Amino acid sequence: MVGSIGAWMQATAQGWLVLDLTDSPAALGLVSALQALPTLLLSVVAGVIADRADRRKLLAATQVFSAGVAFTLALLTTTGAIAFWQVALLALLAGTAGAIQTPAYQAIVPSLVDRAAIGSAIALNSAQFNLSRILGPSLAGAVIAAGGLQVAFWGNAFALLTVATILWRLRIVTPPDLARAETSMWSNLLDGLRYARSQRMVALLVLLAGVPALFLLNYLVLLPVFARDVLRIGAPGLGILSGGVGIGALAAALGLAVLRPSGGSGRSVLIALVVASVAEIVFAVSRVVPLSVVALAVLGACQVVYYATTNTLIQVLVPARLRGRIISLYILTSWGLIPVGNVLSGLLAERTTPTVALVAGSLVTLVTAIVVALAVPELRRLAAGSAADQRGAA
Image 1 (tube, helix red, strand yellow):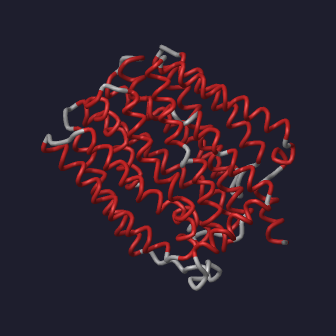
Image 2 (image 1 turned 180 degrees about the horizontal axis):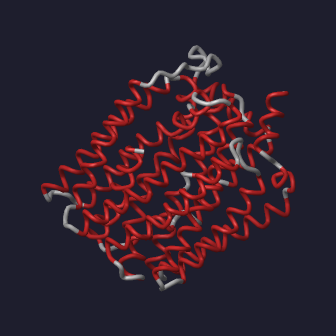
């Protein structure tokens, strides 16, 4: 949670800094794309590494590297020497560390909890992440309004070092069925791809995750534009908008953890996509701040339901020895395609309006979810509990 608060503070301050330096929605999209680009390029390889390496040491090392990036950004901002190209480069470096560590973070969950509690574990992790989404942007908005934007970057740097220390001291037993080091990484990679191709539901969940990444999650990169130019509520208002997303996400995460400890179902995935699309359309067309916050809260809740449920379904469907690799494919589609979506939405927002950019992406997501729901009834019937039992029997 310490790390998540720091990350949200930096993300909020970084968006505001880019807008101050360039006054360009396209520049916002470019920086966000650069930060997410390594996920597109490296996530599959990172999944193989997560199945071969000591995940605890890997995670600690990437946190230290990220702290170095945050310290550099903080120092440049404090001294007034910051330029747009430096923000873009540091975003790329931070994204590289994130791309390498994310599959290991996801794959380590079953080493900490019993299979029956995986759904709750993922939901509780989402809860802390989204509580941080409330606190982090709110703190960032306050320091930006007070003229201390660089404080957000310093805070994240120290938070990352704290997380690295905790991870280094954590004792986790490495599962005995990880990919063997004597086998080449290329062979490990092909093994994971063959498995994903042979399992229809796994392949569908992985591919479907690319739709919101391309067309729905672009609302995050455009929030500074809506706060400053559309709703005209400034930096404190940006914290309120981000906090609205976090409140909805936190409520959904806690609800999932309590009500569905073993995870959700394919029906929940599809419903969440439909409702999220409608909520984003409402936010895009709203010019009333309370309505915008409510729409973002609903959107945040649906986003958590969608990703937590999809993650749980993949965790229980996939055997431990392949988990890092399959999760890396899921990360590739669910987060790796975000750079493309951010660039497209930034360009569309600059040539038309931010409202048009969000509405267009939401409609594509909405139509896709409805088509999949009608065309693949097996997905609607898929449930995490039964999937785990089937895999155990197999």
